[in-house]
Length: 400
Image (cartoon, rainbow, N blue to C red; front, side):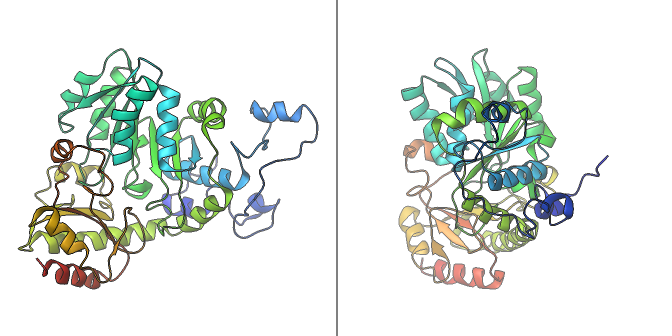
């Protein structure tokens, strides 16, 4: 029996390794880029055998590619899942799961602690254009509130942890007990954590979603997403959904992601260390009203986060400054090293104003309820020297 490798080794070897058993076809130290949309067949019937999974191989680039397959195997190994599916973007994965699992008249359960575009899909586009009814968990810290929203029509429960941008932490193990009792799949968006800090499947979740654009790739060069789950789910998604709603991830983007994943554990450790130091600095600053980061003792889910994410809390935090939107804009536009970018998870430190950029489709009342105040700044803490990040924050906050 082949011994299971640890996460750091899987980041380098899962799916493809420069050893004879893996490289006989290509004799390449690094995974090859197979930039082909079509694949010749040895016989007419080979297509049927490949498409039914009776024979390994590839038949059409809209749903499969050898380079993308290496990435999928690596992601599945790192998450501890049976199989993974790389998608053209994180939101492509969100849409694919929604389209695949729910139909007209069905219901889904989630809260406001959700990525802005996913929130818009669940609460605006899905009911208007897909006939899917969202049921809203008003207090995601209350497990009974989650259970109250589950009905016989519920097709999945969606949680994001830690959440973007307020770093709310959901108790996955406890929520998974509830969803299992109701025979409803639990989907966890684990983009902020990556498998280095959190493996939701180990805690009872059924499906994990990632935006590969963020920390997993980590340098702002690609757009991509991933779904990790059971063999049956991924095979069904590929056969009955992916081919009809768009392409798989491109081979070149998959290759860039593979190259970045080799350093993911080391990068995430540095992100966590830097973010903790930045959070501690911001927490004591006179112009900062509050800081959202689980390492701080006053974080509402501090104890849960320590138990659920013992290796660190990731590279993103948010903080509220004096002066509302005007104050936040003044600080952001005063940065000298930190860039203004409506994204997160890059090697460089970047800042976003969520109320204007990522969560502008929410009403002001919805944003307030989610803790996304006009004075909130989201900071994706990069890999620079922490003293330089803090110095830039200090001089910018001095403008208030």
